[in-house]
Length: 222
Length: 217
Image 1 (cartoon, one colour):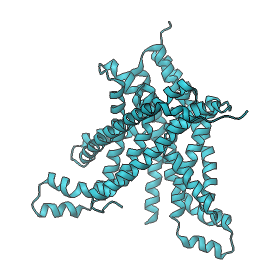
Image 2 (cartoon, one colour):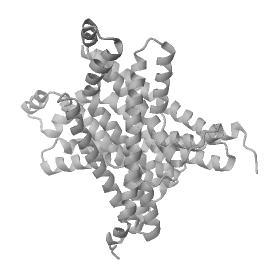
Image 3 (cartoon, chains in turn orange, yellow):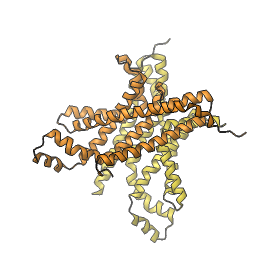
Image 4 (cartoon, helix red, strand yellow):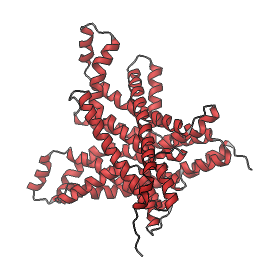
């Protein structure tokens, strides 16, 4: 007996699909924004003179990079309440994604900062700029431009990994798929469609961010 | 209800570690074999096959591993093919690993100068012999550090198998949490165990990379 595909059964859930997509993209946007800002701060602190600060950041980066995202998320959602920090599922998901992306962003941006020649900051000093403008106006833009593709890649990975947040009942794209297939028993069609949606999101996100980067860094992003 | 001591929790978690390691090992071995096959096709003569490999890699790298797992575990039974959690996890992670390894190794092969292929050809070697005797031995040196690095990603990815009910470390942690209500201790320990599994690999990958960098000069 052959299986009859029925994608038509999914049309009525279009609204749900859109809501789920919005949640997935919203979470990714929050994590990307905070992750990159904190990543810059962390990478900058790594160049500072405080040894303990450098060590703490290095430990944080290693801890996050060597444990699964889902375990980090479960820890934040299930374990932190016992310390008195009670978060909603959505807050926990956003926090977990940010914590995760920040670690990778620190690593990437640190490599970017190292790729900027020392003469650049010396040139800044020679025209009388103070350390903060030298960092913000001269070194950082070049550093970000150099590692921009890696940064975009990591943000896309964070978006794809966010499928896991459905496991703490955040109503993201994956959760919507779970719900729909429990209603219509069309699990194959449902998951196939959602997989395609993720693929399209990943491709579009990469394209858009790369294009934005070219504008932002005036052609310095390859 | 029985009381769980810290030792009970730790012991139960440690008993689950072999399953995480086994799944990683199977996915890595299987992924390596399939990845090598993809690599051979990727540099082969047939254009459509090369495009096919590109799409395969793009597909696995551009979609969540969780969706791939759900498609196999929940989707295939709807088509009449029953799969166990164990089979679904092993199959998905193998395919996932093959796509990433094929992509990593492609970069390493491309880093070998074109003249090496030509040199092989001038000795009268055919494509497969060129790849096996000339290119791969050189590419292998470049490939080892990122391959070890990917192994870390793979070990972490096996945690997703818990979602379809495969009893590895993360799944065991969830069951223990439901029984003991001690999420802080349990997920703390689980994170520690994953760290102990992954950190040496991360360090090894870094050390190998450094050695490669100094060899070049």
